[in-house]
Amino acid sequence: MAGLMDGFGCFTHAVVRGIPQSLAREALRSGSLEVDLLKAQEEHNEYVSVLKHRLELEVIELPADETLPDCVFVEDVAVVCGDTALITRLGAESRRKETEAMKRALIELGLNIVEMADESATLDGGDVLFTGREFFVGLSKRTNQRGAEILADTFKDYAVSTVPVLDRLHLKSFCSMAGPGLIAIDSSEPAQKALKIMQQMSDHKYDKLTVPDDLAANCVYMNLPGKGHVLLHCSPEEYPESAKVFEKLKDHMLIPVSSREKEKVDGSLTCCSVLINKRNKI
Ligand code: GLY
Image (tube, rainbow, N blue to C red; front, side):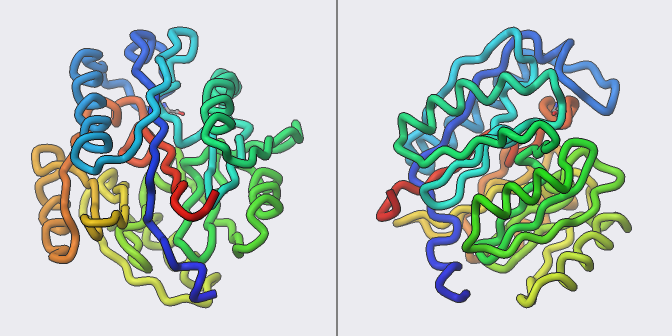
């Protein structure tokens, strides 16, 4: 198992997608705050610019599609691990066509494509937490047991455990990897309970980084040549107390990136990219 952690967080490529104007009014959401489209686009441009210019990843930018208001949230449509990409069957029917452009891009990148064809299965990538050793899959309104089973069949080298997601959209709405063996989690009772379940199901002892704000535990960890541990996390303007927790990670290159507008339509940092490692793997 230990070897499986090698290369955790190493990425060379990212696939992102533009924000359509339709996001403001038509994207799915659990809240009712009005989205400032211009600000959302600026926020997203900043996110893409960090990946491209600051982290020097090769970024493939798929064009926005006005008929797919949620299309910027690319994480949900593909789970990539090593040289295999599982194209998901999204829980929300209105989002299912988002997979088409992603599939073409991942074929172009030379990945092995597995499609979730079973019509009884649903899975959103936002429910998939890969720790480098194993997968945790949130069973939510968007992801079901059959979806988790197909993920387990696709990535047979790794254990796959399921976790109930009761009060949020996705598993990664309240947790994400902040480093090798380090899970960022918010302080709410349901989140802490879910983490306990994950710890009980694993034979690995994960460390936890608890942040006080409910939506602040979603961060993007990478380990990049010449840069080391990199973490995109919430900005101090959005969540000052949670940002302070991330700022204590002295070994990481810390990059605060705001998701304030995208959060109004249940977006987060991990949602907006599919990260791929082509080095020595494909
Ligand atoms: N707006 C993101 C989603 O609900 O899928």
